[in-house]
Amino acid sequence: MHKSTVNALYTDPRLIAVYDVLNAGEADHLFYAERIGPESRAVVDIGCGTGVLALRLAQLGHSVTAIDPAPAMLDLARARSGAGQVCWRSGTATDLPPDTRFNIALMTGHAFQCLLTDEAVLQTLLAVRRRLRPGGVMMFESRNPVGAPWQRWTPEYSRRMVELADGEQLAVWHVLQDFDGALLSFDTHYHFQRADVRLHSQSVLRFMTHAAIAEQLRLAGFVRVDWYGDWQGGALTPASAEMIAIARCD
Image 1 (cartoon, rainbow, N blue to C red):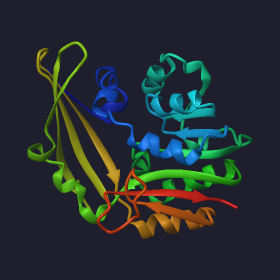
Image 2: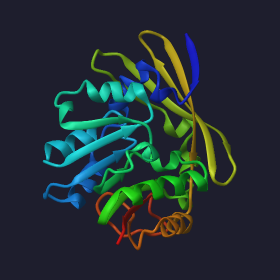
Image 3: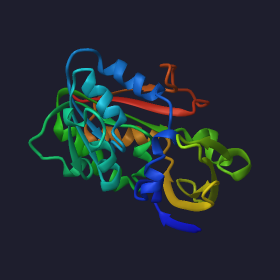
């Protein structure tokens, strides 16, 4: 059986159920949690997905609001143990109540790359900026286009096997469809081998340059940005895989 859907990884219950397994690893979460610090902060997690980071931060004592435009992802987040510690909302940054104020805004899991136009980027950054308290910080990351990571998003390089909790073997791989220098269109294929169920999700991501992101942050009113190139806190260089921004407002 085969089914193809745009952004199925955010809507298909079968793919949402394995989302955390396919995106295992916590280096980014630890990086952001360390920079937030131990003192209790008001935090908003934009594009919170299945809520793993939001719950981690709530358990560390922060006051957390988590928002995502995918209802099925939020359903999973709300069903987690301890989910009552987080205020869950449906939507994007622009849907946050205008009178809410936060010390920290997060946009992790490369969600920033789902903003496909300058207008969408600026609207999001402005929405965040207006809801940050004086001295507030926005943290997010984007893949560095300098290294052309999409060249490895082929079946030969990207194919991997994942064993699920029930013993099912899941094969996952990417197929590049188009790249115009900024917007990357690709398919992610999923083959549940025991059940012989085949799904694939069509996606588009934007690869902005460091200079372009910095300019959008400036236009949105962020006065200082610290950049990192990896989850160990290394400096951003042309060879860095990640461009991690810690953007501060006055």
